[in-house]
Image 1 (cartoon, one colour):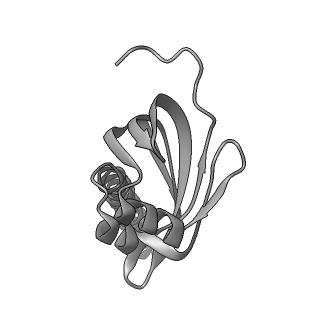
Image 2 (tube, rainbow, N blue to C red; image 1 turned 180 degrees about the vertical axis):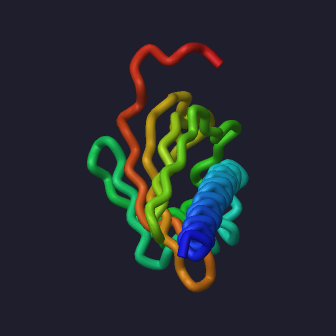
Length: 151
């Protein structure tokens, strides 16, 4: 009986380690995917953006403006917005089951709708696991941060 209890405890520890490793791998995958998305925005790579964004994606900006997948992909394809720099820092990723949340500080520098911009802001991106892999479902961005250091 003790041997059976020992085997069961060992199996449970192995299962817990496997789950933990899978969660760590999920965090790594989602972090890389979000970084890939930011690079696609910088490069106006509408095809990559479309592949990462969920069909029912919504972005809510700090001023309340809402954008859909079509809005962002069309904007990238039009070239109206162009970034010299679109990179995040201080990235953290949390995973709970089939949902992951990325929070990071973003530095954006370039032209948005013909206006030069250079700002930092915080964002949180929500990803969901689908049969095809992780998909970016929802984003929320802060207003630009005050007193941004010169870059």
